[in-house]
Image 1 (cartoon, rainbow, N blue to C red):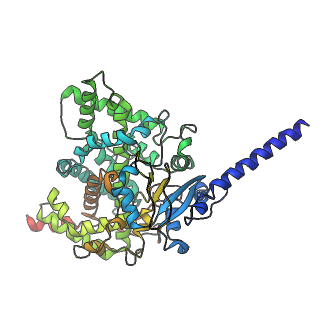
Image 2: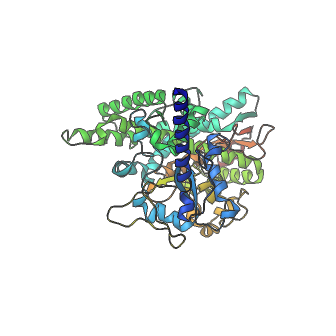
Image 3: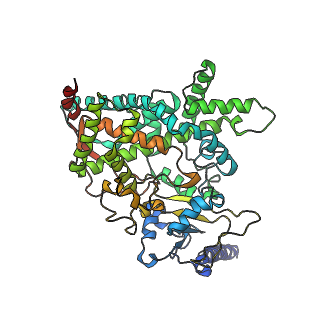
Length: 524
């Protein structure tokens, strides 16, 4: 009898759960919005849940579904939660710029208790705290401040060239390597010195602390992929499941390192016009008014900004550099043109490039911009719709007779936009000429946004671009790259990654080709 009752309760619960999911999964059909039929319970995240495809590439597949090619939006389900994939350029502009006040938060979440550095950093922080900290950090990233950082970057560029020479000497000249790792060592050392005033020494020691922690954060194991899956698709469960963007050991490392640097900076009074100066200033500002609440009284809030600056700073630049080298190895004529431009500028500058000179290198800029089109580091953007008190909710008219509901997640498929033949001729082809001065005016602005758009765009884009350019100059100055047997013929992306990463890495042969040294005597 008891067993029968238990079975009845279990079956009734399963039926109720199934009915609830079915009800949720009929939302877009009831609202008259075109949608992708969901899988029971897990919605449209099956391939992501099974780690068969990354979410960014899955969104691209949805965007490119021929049945939906004329639609402005596509309804999907993040597990049981109805969400929208935005296809129309004007709607994207509305979300990111015109109606930003309704979409100022990301849909993804971090756990405020289990992962305070993740919860409080500029990438995830919400509402007025985001606006306040963005305003405080913006002065670090002006063109004038970035120019001041350039001399420090150049020192790391010299370290990169020396590291390549050491690799070559160990291997009697040329050598095959996973190029992303070398690029990550460069960008790690660069970010550590320009933001924190620390010599990370990753190029001298690939197992240096900064590099080790950065490597762990962006190695998408099954466990890391699970954390990101919950953060983006089940954000209400991040606290229950103790999901962490920053791992406990990384958080401990950043607290110890940044805390020590801040204390030393306050003691010495040294000013370097870097991120640490801003964090020290915020802490002093908070201490001056002890009776008033201030987010900077929370040390984790300050350390969180350093943590996200470091992680975003090294990953974006190292990805851009490595994808650029992959394409240049496949297109040796383009590589030769770029190396000749770099060499001519180096000869003119006596072996180094001023800030103004590197920014004026036309073909270098074209190559980097085209790499960011083909390989945007963050292949999608997520936002959460928020109703504004006293104002009607946002309507999707004239496309659909539907009004957005508070809390609806929206996703903008950046990778898909960057590869849409509506906006790009032969989008799968690597072609820097798209970004020549003559052709740049033909680019549809919202169809190209490797750093996002509007108030929530990437605050560090200037640093990321300059770092990538300098890294390529330092590497190609006296070396070239070419494909080898281990090089992927067609790029495949890691299905577990939430940023764009090559599956298995990018293996290239680095060739000792002293182009500048052969030209240098002519200026003596």
